[in-house]
Amino acid sequence: MTVPEPVAAAARSMADRALSWLHANRALGALPPGTTEELADPDSVYKPLGETTLAASLLLRDGVAGPGQLAAAQSLMDFTWDQFRQGDMLYERQLRHTLMTDPLEVYAPFVRCGYRHADLDRLLAHRARLRSVDGVELLPNRRLAAANAARVVGLDREPGGQPDWDALARATWLGARPEPWAINWITAYAMTHTVFHLTDWGRLPHGLPPDLTAYVRTWLPVWIDIWCEVQQWDLVVELLIVGASLDEPYCRPEDWETVAALQHEDGLVPRDGDPVDDDPQERFTDHQHTVVVTAVAGSVALARAAGR
Image (cartoon, rainbow, N blue to C red; front, side, top):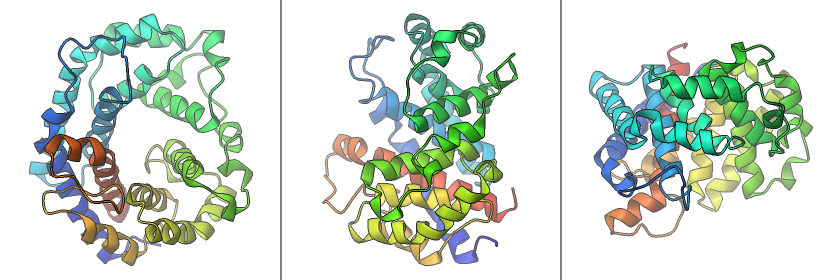
């Protein structure tokens, strides 16, 4: 099964305009002056910066954007790397908070694109050997996030660093193949991220076990229809990434064309069916994540269409 041409066309438009919006509005996502590794609210700016980095890194990894868009993605990577003080902030945060996984997760997209911080590399290698880190109680999809970040950084090549991917998959909601009608909003997000991390955002489509792939393929059309009906566009776009990440991509043209039609001329994609605020900062804060996942969805789908 290949990615249909209408999907590839929609994906190209969606990814290009989403990246342009992220690049044009990057200053709205800058860390406040004086920000240190002791973050009062990591979700306010720090986490969105990491998400922007992820989107730019996947566009560069997949290499399916045009030269201008690839240059914009590289510029975004440089911007966020500077925001994190060329990795010093991530190093200091990991040094002071051994059990936190977010420094590793934020660092991984940089490593994907060739950015390294020698002290952080040594610290993460040391941290990977600690029993206390293995013993941290994380939600199963969060444990997968940390495992995939470690894989990207290269920590899976450390002694004893190769995780049991099947066991990690089976511990998740998706791994149980539960009644599909019992899914709710937060569980759906957990399910999408289970797929993202097992496949490394579409790079390893066979990383999702065959029985889980069959389950997702059966119910994904229903879930997309449901969240389209209630206009939860952020989740719909994440479900599009899931479909593009399967061993045989599931990409229904009408789903992609629906999201492409929602996208504003400047590249913004609304989070939901509520009105979009006119204030630039509010627009960025409310819809940045949806634009990020739109850029990712387009890049992954185009990479699969190109046979990568």
